[in-house]
Image (tube, rainbow, N blue to C red; front, side):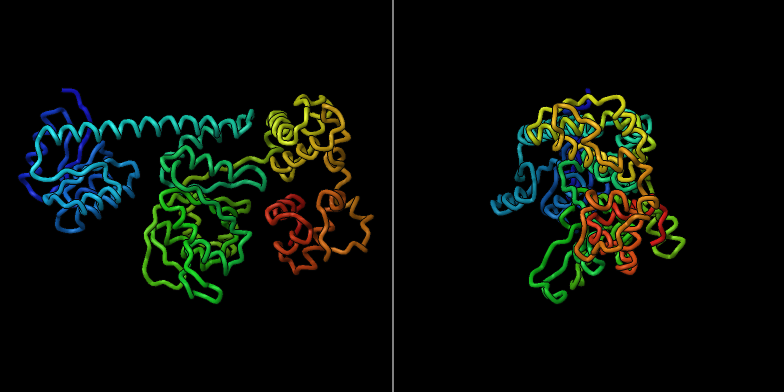
Length: 465
């Protein structure tokens, strides 16, 4: 008889296991048996089952606790609870914890077969919906990534390959290359797509606050902790957490993060009890972590735990075939948002200018430039006059322009990066770093840009902070 589905029977009574096993196999089901909740969980982790028949009253962790653990492994697991007691409270508790249905002993064979068929039908529908969602998400993700270059097409293919796994992923690349988009694509194409995706920008959080944000805290854990708060790891349970700028976190927090990766447990601030979590970690950095390890700034064991699967995003200057399709995409996007009728066609001479530029801010800088051009364009086409001067004449940037910098600029007031800094970036960055004693976050705030952009420009100009 053709296989109709796979069923796991978990019951401590040998007679009951034997009766259910024979009955279900006679109907063409593949059946595995387990005599405790612990044994059932072991089998469930090793193999996917269409249905679980689970006795409520068993020695050890018991049926209801086993059900909770099953659903942690597979949120769409279908379980039918079997109880010897006609207890309404037991049935309610089982349904509240995610059971598909309940049946009491002694049961009629036809009744158990009817419930089994309904449970497997439910599982099949869930799988079909999940497959459809995955197909739609993959299609959406492909549209999100406007790519023509071989480098990016190969990267996107690799993302689809590694997304279904549970393994930690490290995404590297310069600021503005799209690391968060890649992280979201990994999550959306995984089995966790319907669970939370939580983003944490480590560089934007002070070291003393980051640990509380990651692991949470209880009331009174520190001054100002007026109420308990869930951390990002607990919020992301069952889903994925994206740790952007992972290289900026403190050594103490690195040690705790390593433990989460290795043991899937953490302790909120002010608490002594461990909490278990099932979270896929996706990390990103625009710095060289190997160098940070050599300099004693990053734990070597954590680096190797994060670097199981590595995805490097090439800078825009290394995939200039993508500039035209990206520009067209952003023109269409911001024309629609601003109710402008702007052609997506670019003059060949203007396209040559864009392709000749080095794009230190990568795709993010291109998007910013196009958004501005769409807004200030006087006609229905983007022209040279709509493009920033530093892109049109890149040779004027740097030391030549910096020689004429007025020393009377008051950095303490903060300045607009694109309006005043465009021709004098090198000297302004150096002066900002001098004023702040090399503190990049404060220097970035002084210059009117975010920390990751400043870090990218320091590397681009080969400055020494």
